[in-house]
Image 1 (cartoon, rainbow, N blue to C red):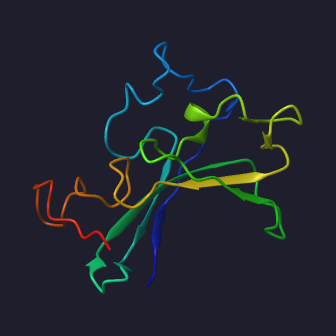
Image 2 (cartoon, one colour; image 1 turned 30 degrees about the horizontal axis):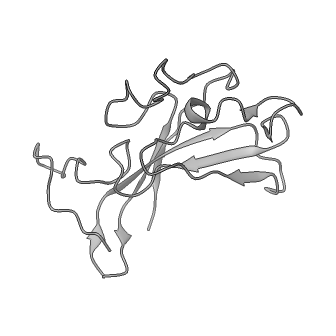
Length: 142
């Protein structure tokens, strides 16, 4: 498998970006697709346990901070079932530059990938099929 990547940058000031909506629903204004500030990695194919293949398989992800040369400062954050990979949108009080934050992006490289099946940029029933404009194609679940 040879992945191709379209890399983008994360928001610079993560501590003050993406506050929750006034009703507390941080996803209330979300649209489908890769969220602003996220990046996209496209795998040629991804084989599920069932043997079914997703090809190509886009994976949206967001990173914060800088990866050290040894690659030992990675913090992997998983999002809730209904969120996207933009950690700063739903954990803004916990994520930021400095020791006052639980996840200090001045010391850690934070990585959050969008879950398979999510409509926010990763392969899902909403993913466009290659050579087709149809959405909602049958999607394997295992």
